[in-house]
Image (cartoon, rainbow, N blue to C red; front, side, top):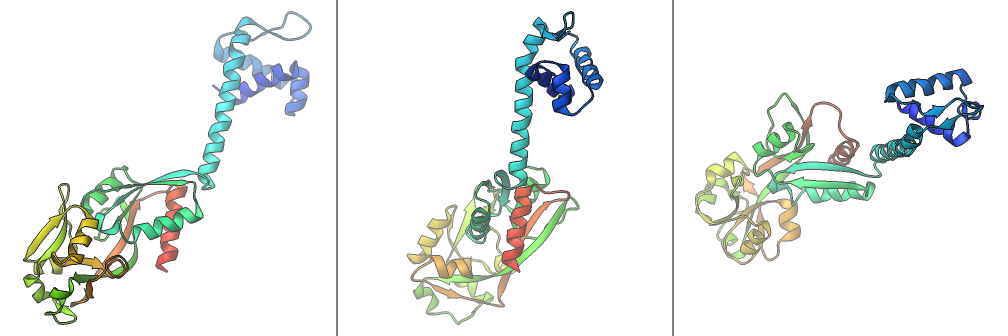
Length: 289
């Protein structure tokens, strides 16, 4: 159904006839009359009684008047919602985020986005692995993905944000016997507390670190618990330097030799992004500049 014709029908009712409605709508009277007849043909019903000097609503016209006004109101409401999303007054952003990045840099990125656009709702999914991030973005379950592993897919685009140093975080008694920086070869003798989940298994950090790891003391699915275990002396763990220095107490933060770094990447499907996703990319680009 042509919404323009519905609007014409309501205008004729509100202005009491074709002549006044045509003047208010800035269209010719014959054109408006033809538009009303076209609407009647589409509906298969006569909306106005034309037997007298003016137009009066038929029973069908009276029955259609309420729904016609509701149709126009719904359209205006939809327009306002679209404009609000476009203008970033509201909107929703679905993200798939690798668990190792959920403590940093995700909070900093979302905080900056929310300060600029407080109406946006961000939903963060944990896909369990880097391949899960890729899969959720590729399949459309998430619009953006945050990962630290290269993504090899013709369907996805990748934007590298920044590098992070991955440090070895130790209780002081473990650190006392180790050189600074800590050679990767020495990691095999260090009891480690590592992140683990049923969905993704042990969280991957880096190939070189993976080969160096030998003595795992605790596997834990709760990130905060891992930090507490390290602070209480249960073992060492690997964390980005900003997190280790800001969040953990009474620990020693050491670089490795050679130094281990990871690249934080945003991935998304090819094609236009929603206004919310585009705003997030703009925030990420500004923070990584």
